[in-house]
Length: 84
Image 1 (cartoon, rainbow, N blue to C red):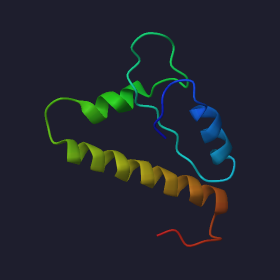
Image 2 (image 1 turned 45 degrees about the vertical axis):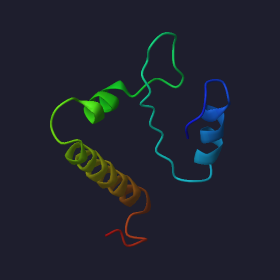
Image 3 (image 1 turned 120 degrees about the vertical axis):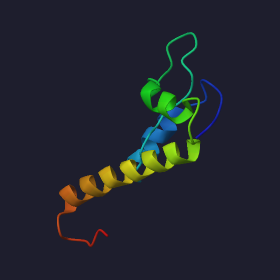
């Protein structure tokens, strides 16, 4: 969700996450003030690191993210569903 500051994004995402599996990520720059929620600075820096192939970075991030999601889902539901 992209919108200006103070428009209820965090509250809206909290409500959505109560109903739908959600992976909240905040990659905005933390210039001045105290952003809420906290910036995922290490992830942002990894994704925008100068040099190298950004598509490969995005691919690595997304593959790792979805592998972790798969592991988490499997640990929650066990063998009740097929996770390929």
